[in-house]
Image 1: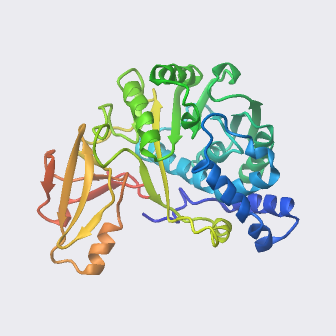
Image 2: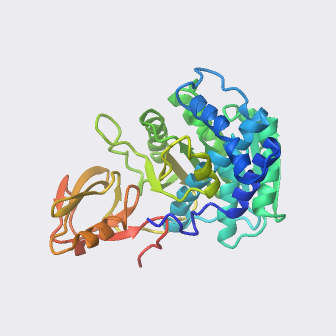
Length: 389
């Protein structure tokens, strides 16, 4: 996929805002300010992984240096994840808000990683006036969200905030909202068992405007992705339409033993400031990884039968491409012959699609399938290409 595509590219206004925050807290300019962010980014990285607390997370946003470091390094990644998820819900499935002035709720907003991204993408579709509401435990994060939204979205987007807890619906605004984003909060609610998570989702739905969208994003770790998948499958069996990432309401066949689980692995182009901070950290910034689910009761763009969703990377082996898909509730192994193509042409073909993309071919579903030739494979959708007629 093209990581520089405008539908998912991280906006220059957003990068400039967080570089400015780094300069304020470090009292340095440009690269020197970013250099001062490196230890703070390393500290946050450890906090999110190896030093992750068992119970309560500290309010790291209360430290201006950690907040700025988060904005420079981690926020662009979550912003991009949200953009990619919305590319499928809006681009492939045709979702759009029904209100003239759409209202967005960013639940567990932090400084606005997902909510500002959602508003920014709606602006790209031609919607000017938007109401954005952030809910978070951290007063410092909420204050920063208001400034970040103003700098990135302009005056036509009204931003309001409220101190609240993503796990406690009584602290949320009543709505209704056209789009509710819960970005990376379910993994911070381990106290909720599956039944409690379903009730929590019901509280989201109760605040949704007619035709609205619920978007939940989670880390790509197997334990977090499968917990979200179980929730998603149960909701899909009920009265709401699952519009992404699966193409139907059938249970995901990846649940259970096996090497695959539902998550996205997407190429992106990290902003220059993020790359600069990463010079001494050596984190792999080539891809963003995440899991997500999206639901709506709105009418959707109908899809033709026979579409498959890639759930693996594309392997280039001698004489063919190989990948795994889900189709009609089953896992399918697909081989695409590449005889007659040069090495350059094979690499070019393999680069046109990847994990999470939608493809089609003329054959009936099969657990193991080999196409007659590479021309039988058609890429139906990726985040940067429109749906085929």
